[in-house]
Length: 182
Image (cartoon, rainbow, N blue to C red; front, side, top):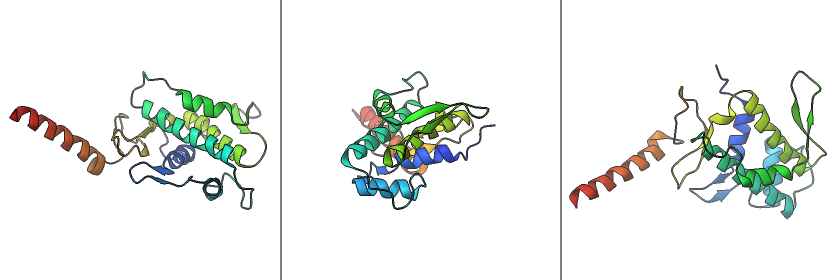
């Protein structure tokens, strides 16, 4: 049985959700806010130097690449590594180690780039524990909130059936009603 309380998966979910698409609220809007987010999630020690604009752009690219990869988890035939995620991962200071029973990605250096590399390492952890493909984004175009699909058959499409699922189904019903009235 897949462990659905993966710390790595929840960290990735929270990182993607640092942008609330519906409200246009971005927790990473500035280099200082990025640094604060990373410290708050234990990826960077308190008192670390603040990120700069270049690293902020890397973080945004990583976040949106992860969002696209999570969207692709709804359709297993989709490209598992969107170009934006591939480009973001290529910029991160990482190396592979084989010191224990399993290979792992290890961030190199310190500071904000290394903290972002810890997020990339979380992809490998989530993949190893079976939660990576359960990370999805809501299919409601106005939402795109990331969630961990804990359904038995991995078929969840919305962050909330009560809100986004209802919106989508109501729109479809209204569209069908307009067609039948024509």
